[in-house]
Amino acid sequence: MTNIRMRAMLERLNVDTLELAYAKLGAVYVKAQEACRNCDRKRACVLWLDEEFPERPSFCPNIETFERFLQD
Image (tube, rainbow, N blue to C red; front, side, top):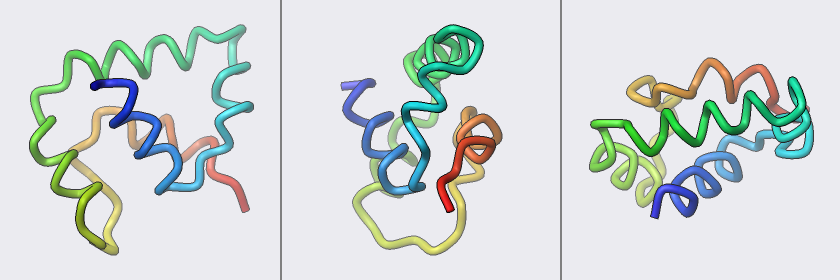
């Protein structure tokens, strides 16, 4: 389930997943997956993904990482 939420978050935020995956030879992606897996805000994540909230998901432990890889 974690991978599904993370993939949905990456898509919704328009993250360049290839850049994220290759950053530091994959270490950034692995760290993001681990943070997602250990996140205690899963319910907030699911709600944010299911709705059309315009604001960034500040509850997400990966938001700063994801924002570094946003596509134009």
